[in-house]
Length: 281
Image 1 (cartoon, helix red, strand yellow):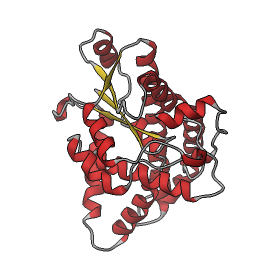
Image 2 (tube, rainbow, N blue to C red; image 1 turned 180 degrees about the vertical axis):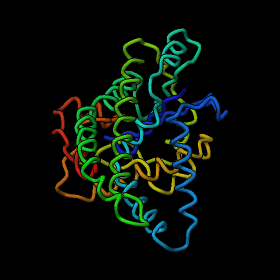
Image 3 (cartoon, rainbow, N blue to C red; image 1 turned 180 degrees about the horizontal axis):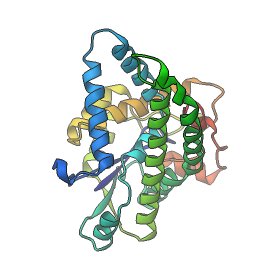
């Protein structure tokens, strides 16, 4: 497995976990994985509809998915810590790399940024998970509506699963850090990509600046040979750009990367952001 730290702005970083040895045999998949594959295929078939209620559900669903915080998507990309995976990682049968652009993220800060991403939203995910579980029985009577599925129930079910996966992913990262099983690996490819396509990681007037734009999304995903990264980068960049347009939004306290973070550390810490708790549901 490989963790990628991709700075989106001078103060925010996208986490993505690339699973290098994924089991593809259907009989070896867990029930959770089988359910996820079935849901993905069903959603893909609905997206092919030109009209009708399925098409509308897909349109509204994609609109909602884009607003789920990118930090949550990043943690969901980390697989839960099963007993088998714990043994493989502890016995070094499966290595876990931490890749990052050393020209933007100093080596001494890489693990700290990963730890912050793993822990900062755990309480929020637990709270949202509880509320989703409370809401599911309340939404159950909608099943009496003919023809159309119980969409409120399935939405709350998906969000409960999403929060659980984010919690599990964060715990997996914390365990790896505690056991010192991560192998920091500064990436030459990422250094070249940020040097060629990204903005300079500096903060004029002590204001957060974006490093990547939508134009770099396909270049990054193709050079890293990770097609699934394209949608993750696109979503994260869009969310950061939208947040920077809001003059009432506070600066994020976490994921500071590169020279801007070192400068911030030498002055005063930015105020804690409450923006991540908004628009989560």
